[in-house]
Length: 165
Image 1 (cartoon, helix red, strand yellow):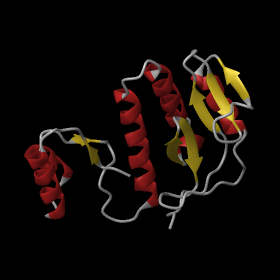
Image 2 (tube, helix red, strand yellow):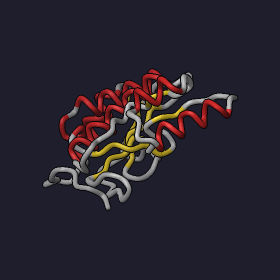
Image 3 (cartoon, helix red, strand yellow):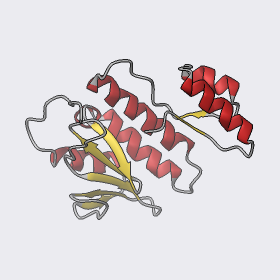
């Protein structure tokens, strides 16, 4: 998962960022030597700690949703925030594919998918699906309704997130 990203037409800027990364610079320092660099919100976690990796990934998802430039940004941001506000979902490792918010009981690189997916439609509805992106468990008017249904479809007895690989 990227810790930084950005766009530039200047190859020298890319080389500066790559050199700083290679030399072990902190993320903020990389940003200072290459102004195009954007921090994704995923923090450096010094030890493989699944709880901190999960927290960091949630922060990254929330920042990503906040910075989207698509027309449906507000709906997507609302479903991410509603899921994060729910302790049962916040305890799981979040990931997305095709803008569907999914959950895992393990961190990357080997995800163990659990529970339904959440989607935000361009029509202002929020979907819950037992599979990838098809909202076969329902479409809802608010993200909170969708999150409540997702929580009801979580398996019982989920433990803390473990390292995935």
